[in-house]
Length: 460
Image (tube, rainbow, N blue to C red; front, side):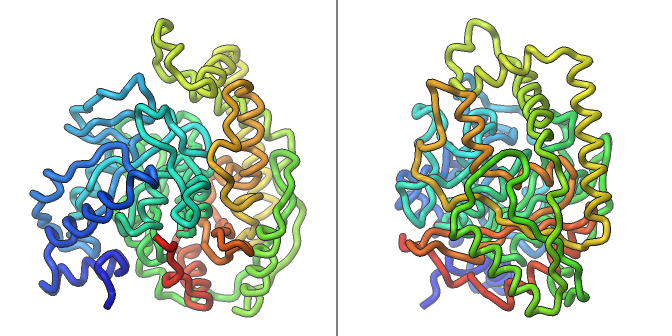
C-alpha cells in the first residue's frame, strides 16, 4: 500500500481537495517521519509542529495543504532563523521574506527551517555542531547532502516533506539535488523576487524548488515566481506546471564535459551519466552537438572576487568574528581587501563574461553538462578548517559547472538520471536560454517520462 509520503506533492494536494486526507493528517504523517529520521540526516535546524498542526489553508491552489519547509537563510516571522551561524542562533525575525509569504499564501504548510551552512556559502552543509549536524544524503548517511540547500534536499529525498524551497548563488539548489537524487531547478535571474532584503547586488542568487518530480518542481516554482513591487529587475513568468504537458519541439542541444572554472577530475560515473543523457536526448529527436567551453578559465578569479565581497557585506562585529567558521572568516577577509572600484570592475567583467557566453550559445536551445564532477563525497572531505583557501578551491573542483549559469542568469536544472556502480545518485544538468524556464521544464518533463526515476528511493 502506498504511504502518504510516497505520493507526489501534487497527488497529496489532490487527496486533500477530494477529502481523502486532511492537511492535519499530512502534517502529522510527515512530522512523524521527521522525528524518526531527521536527526541522522541533518535535515532540519528548527521545527514548527504547533503552527503546522494548527494550519488551515484557505487557498485552492495546486499545492494547498501540502507540507513543506523553508531554508534557514530565509527570514520567517516568529520562527528562529539562524542563517547557519552561531552568531544568529537566537535570532527570531519579525518579518518574512517574500518567498515565505508566497508559500503561505499558496496554502503550503511549513514544518520548519532546513539546514544550511554558515550564511549559505559552501557547497556542503556542515554548520557549527551547536546549530545542526551535517546534512547527509539518505542514499548513504556517511556522505554529504551537498549545499547550501542540503537540509532541504535530504528532507525531500527522504520523504520528510514532498517539496522544499532552496536558494542558489553558485549551484546551491542543483548540487544537493544531485547528491540526494532529486530534481533541483534554478530559475532565470529575476523570475523569483528576493524582496525585501535584496542582499545580492550582483544577481547571482535566486530561490527555487527542490522536488522528487519535474511536475512538483514546476508547481512549486509557479508558487514562488513573479515580481514584487520594488524589485530592481524581473523576468516575465509563465505557467511552469502547464509547460510540463507541452511536448518540446526538436531542440538544438550544446554539450561539453570539460570543467569550466578550474581543473577538475571528472568521475567516470558523472561522465557516463552525461554520455547517457546525450544518447537519451538524441533518442527523443533532439540534435546534440559538442561545443567549446563558453566561459574562460579566468572567470574563476572574477567569481571569487564577487563571492568573497558578498560574504564580506554580512554585518559581523569584529569582537564576534572568532565565532565564525574558518571558511567564512577567510572569505570576509578576502572580500574586505577588494576596493570599491575593483568590485565595480569585477561586476562589469562578470556581465561581459556572461554576454560573451550567451552569444556563443545563442544558436542552441539547451546546454548539457554533468551537474557535479563527483558523486556525493564523504562528510568532511571538502572542508579544510586549517586552510580555508584550499577548502574553497576543493569546492570548485567538485562543482566546476554550476556557478556558470548563475553568472549568465540562465535557468538550469539537475535531473537524477543516473546512479554510480555503488548506488549513489548522479545528476545531469540542463541549462536553457534566459527567461525560457517553461521550455526547460517542458524538456525536463519529456526526459522524466522517457526515463522515470520517482520510484527509485533511498533505503531509509
